[in-house]
Image (cartoon, rainbow, N blue to C red):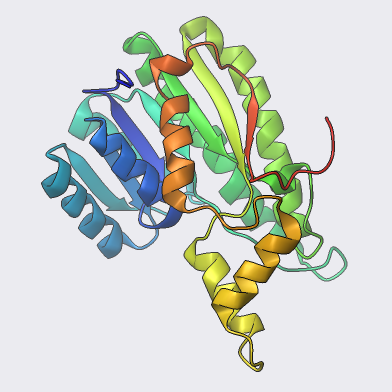
Length: 264
């Protein structure tokens, strides 16, 4: 299927690894030019160079901490300087948390609010005018199944991702008049390095391997009985960014192997 994306420009946060990198590669396969940003500048630039050489598209990598207003301004400037505008924004930067409500300080709540919510607000606010000049665009926010079905060891993550889902709905209503579609994805178990690190920590003093831990966890939580790969999720995200998904506006899409067990 031709996704009709050739020649478009996409900005991807958290683009140096995991879901962000998988989405960047899938965009490049569709002949989309990409700007990747992440906190590890060296790795991000290395990945961008590899993508450019592999797929023969323009790929730019840069260091940016999207909790910082000045760093976001640099992402916006680089996008304008390198590409003259943008068609797609994938707000992907984020990470799980571990705390209790009673013990987590205000600073933790503020940090993850800036990472999961305000980064999407600030980047969208800055890039939407560029999309308008190009006749429209697409924004996809990467939330989580935890926005609706929480994991109780990470209340900050649950709350901020729920806020991102509502932000998506509000943005979709506000921007569709400019032909800018906004949606969010709510992934379930995606095997990223974060899950692997957590599994290794939890099995460090046991006879169980980290691979077995993840296998057992997936079999317990999901009907499909396994984690997805970032590549599997990226297929859906890139489709959602394409004109083939032109009637998808303001929706939350669960890509979770059947894990969601509540109704909305």
